[in-house]
Length: 620
Ligand code: M6R
Image (cartoon, rainbow, N blue to C red; front, side, top):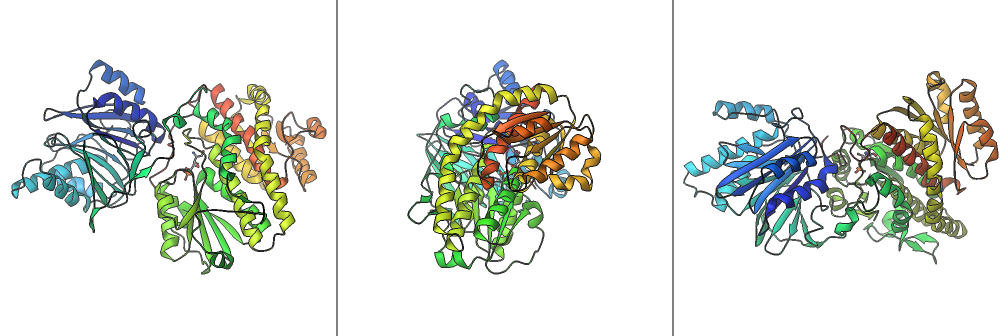
């Protein structure tokens, strides 16, 4: 949530910051702003609304300079308006900063600062940091510090940070320092881009890939000092830190829209490839199993695992639910899926050999990170199934599996879901082959998985039918999504997709649970989306479908090609290829993604930037 960009170097900074903010906009889009330091003066422009609005504003009054910071906001404290937008000034303008995170003790600090004579113009928690830093800087000057000296600036920043409770990613300009930017983090991600006589900082690598391949991921409690020719990192407790430069695994083009009208559609269409990428190099045909390079555990340790906990939020939690079914079926390991936001504060009994997997696209979700840390504290092996390389969860986990899905920019997660399910299938095969699964069964799973990318490609051919169905149903205001076994999580995921981008109320349920309450909702204007491909309990799901029809509920069925019978029962049918039952989520989820996409378009919603949401939820 919130995107930060900063630059110091030889280029004019305004357009570079704007471009960075466009690329970070998926992290939050309530407002945007930039500040530029030039000739001992910090100039600032900020606007409620999209980065585009900010672009119009600076086109009329350009900002000149070679050092600057920018921010795109997802509001936590203080309403969305121009004033509350970042950057914020501290003191009488000697400090200017952008902040991503939440300062929990902001009201106590604000009270103290008011008593000291500081005037607040915003209702944000972030302005508190700016004034506090100005206060500490002035204190340093009074105690003999040299104006604008690096030591003074670092000391003031350290003195400020130790008073903050909460989370922050900060990029700071001091009016007295014409070519130095200071950045710091606890809990909110920051990546430093190393350039040629120029250096960058950003909340994630997406705006950096156009400028450099070399990055340094800042860790909690580190401060970085950036000048055009140097980057220094200092840890709060241990002092100077060696720069661990890493090569970015994404190119600038990965985050381009290409010929697609929206990122969501592009990412839906990338799924044959992203699923293939999730499997690449991970089959051991001779042993009929999967292989993972990064679990960092011995076979002996892995065999001892007697329980698995999958923890995640949102779509990743739904993937976890599919994972539970897979792991229990193929590996016979008792598995539970925990909402990370609950697990972080719960204290469930866990045996010594319980293994934790945090499932996350971004690797930055605050609740997932906190749940992982809590489990780690208790001594459990904590692994990550993660897409973003170098993200906090990826770095803090004991080991893990990358999705290799490429950047997912659309706020509604699509390709990450199918990649997570793919990796969880491989994981079940892996654990299964260490325990009860036979060689022929392992071979069979590999064969089925290898066919999946082509079958997903085939599934995408349902697009025209989905468009037709959307024409009919886009005006309805309540939907039920129903499925059983492997397609129950798919029903949940379909409902979430519709809610988040179309703002339509939708409920996902196990189809048979419906008669315990939700069936009361069924009427002529409440369509039910039945995920009903061929499976062991197909006739049972059909009975549930008939129960809805008997109550005049319109039914859209997602069914297997060749299923003639369903066309007689449902009002509309979207066909998908007939795949093994345990792989069905990889195909049945796709028409549901397309359905929510087209309904959102019909209703004039912003598909890639749905209201109130942000791509990575880095606040609690
Ligand atoms: O980055 P993560 O996978 O940890 O994100 C978890 C959820 O915030 C995310 O899946 C969210 O529910 C999506 N907007 C769903 O489309």
